[in-house]
Every structure is written in structure tokens, then in C-alpha cells.
Image 1 (cartoon, rainbow, N blue to C red):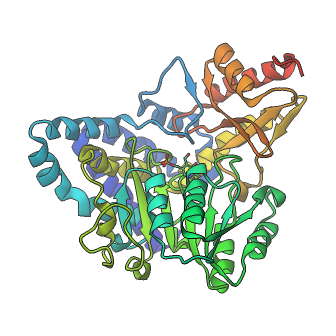
Image 2 (cartoon, rainbow, N blue to C red; image 1 turned 60 degrees about the vertical axis):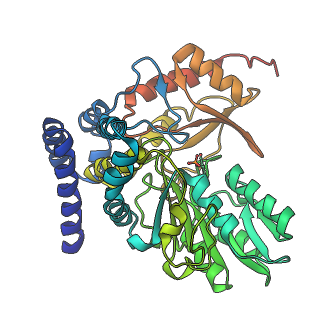
Length: 434
Ligand SMILES: Cc1ncc(COP(=O)(O)O)c(C=O)c1O
């Protein structure tokens, strides 16, 4: 870490502690003590330090009866975020139009700056909204395209984004060219090639899902974006799964447009997201809902979302502080460690298929596993019934298995229960008798 990085990191951490102590002083000082100890360790040692992560678990209010391993679906908030949210919510209820719109909303620009700092972009390029679907939908429907223009997207992109593009295809006569990323697995050069081959002289837009929800695989987003730019295309990045799971800045992806969810890996309130548009592209992107000046270059034109919970929006700040105090690099290392922990221990199980790459650059927290003869939903049901482990099943294209996604509050003990459950599945006859 050079001096500039160190100063920046310290400012982040100190700022985070200052904010967190304003919410709960004793909590903030205990957290600081633990973080200071972690900072004396290397990344690898820190990732497996159960004392530290055990303390982080105590910062959450997760069930002691159910092991939730579907954080890629939606994640719980640490208590400090819930407390902030509840405080703002109760405050709002004293006189909503006054406290919510005049008092709480006055924090919007400070929150935008805090999120922009986390994302490594200018505040003028970031809109706060309700989820990745809203951000990416605004981008997809807002781009000026004419009949015959082409868009390259992935078969393994998220359904809502694929559906939005299909609607534009029907309505506006654009043409979609699909990339099947499963053909290249985790071969980065081959992945770039697949996108390259799908681009024609008529291609205007390339959409890339940074971390694929179906498989857990990470794609070489920057290399694909650079190649697409060299062919004159603009790039949309779906960062719903990667934002705050992986340690990166938006600039690193090469995105012209990006959407992210904040209720997944940032552990911000349910129904929070962000949208990034490169400064010079804002003017030409139409707002989805309403704006007095739809062709303005002000990113705020995308925030006319009507009445929503300003308490939820403003509590995002506490989630950013909590995330910064742990540190993005530490968090990514822990999440990868947790995935490797269980995956290493099931290697010998008969009849299993792992759908996720084990190359460090190509996966992090998520992994998908299936068993011969078992429907994904049967594995999911068995794990819950016998072990109270909650996961989600994925049956899509070539994938048939359960997706496991731990978060920072997950302990290796939780994963031992998962391993026991998977071992049990491997020994049982498949329920549908195949
Ligand atoms: C890759 C990807 N994109 C988009 C979304 C949609 O996110 P949200 O529910 O925040 O709209 C998800 C949700 O799981 C996702 O995994």
C-alpha cells in the first residue's frame, strides 16, 4: 500500500468509526479494537481469523436456528444499519413530509459523495435508487437506439435485464446477439473472444454481467469492455453481485453505464441500489420515469422516483461505514476463503458437479453444486429439512444445482453443517428415483 492509499484508507476507516460511534459509541470502540488487531495480520491470516469474524457475526442479528446461505439473493443488515434505519423511520413518522423530505433528504448529497467515494467515481455520475433492476432498466430503456441497431448480451445475464432487452427488440426493432459464456467457462481470453465474435459493425451496446448469479463465475469485465470500446461500442455493466463483494472501483470495469444492488453485498437496507453513468453520457440517456429536463446532464434527473422511504436511502450511509471499517480487500479475501473452505471439503463426494470456477480471479463468495440424479430443488429441500441450511436452487441452461453464498457473518461452523448436509445428500438415493 503506498502512502496515498494508506492515508485514504485511514480517512475512510476513521470517518466510518466517527459515524458509527455517533450511533453507538461502545459498539464502535469494540469494533475498532477488533479491526486494529486484524490490521496487524496479513490478508490470508486475517481471512481465517475466526475471532475477528466471530465478532463481525455478533454485529448482525441473524437467526441461530436457520443457516442462511443465500446472501446473493439478499443479505441481512448489521444491527447498526437496522438501528439507523429504524431511527430515521420513526423520525419520519413524526411528520413525514417535513422530516422525510426536508430534514432527512438534506443528507442526500453527502450520501451521494460517500457512495461515489466507495465506487471511485465523481458524485455527479451516481444516482441513488431502489435496486439493480431499476438502475439497469433505466439504462436499457433510456438508450437512444434505432431499428437495426444491435446489442450484445449474455445468455447468463440476469432475467430482468434479458427481458428488458427483449421488450426493446419487440418494440423498437433492435437486434439482440447472444453470448453463451458457458462455452468458455473460466478461460478469460476465450470469454473476450466470444464477445468479440458477437459484435458486428451495427453493434452499439455490449452488456456484461460482472459476476454471474447462475454460476458464481466472475468474467474479465475490463478486457471485454476494452475490446468492445475498440470496436466503437458502449458498455453496460451489471454489478448487482460484484459491488461490495469484490474489491474494485467502477473505473476498473471500463463501464460507461453500471447498475448495482446495495441490499446484497453492501448489507444496506432492503430496496437500495445505485446507478452510474459516465459524465459525458448522462445528457443522452433518457430518464425512465419523469424529469422536467430529460436531456439535462445532471445525474439527479434519474432520481424522480416518486414517494419512497428516505429512511431506507439515508441508512445506506451506515452500511458504507460498516463495509469500509472491515475493508473491501479484507472482505473479499474472507468471502473467497469461506467458499474455498466448503468446496475443498466436498471434493471427494461421489456424483457431484461443481459449476463454479476455482480460479481466484474467477469466483469469490458464490459456488453452485449439483448431484447426479438430484433435481436442484430436491437438494435445496433436503438441506433445509435435515440441516436447516437455506440455499437457493438453480435450474437454468446447463446448470442444475444449489447456489451457496455465505457472507461476512457466516462462520466455518455454519459451513461444517452445510458440508454434513451435502455429504448426506451424496449418500442418499435421489428422491425422484433417477
Ligand atoms: C446479476 C444480477 N443482476 C441483477 C439482479 C437484480 O437485482 P435487484 O433485485 O437488486 O434488482 C440480480 C439479483 O439477484 C443479479 O444477481
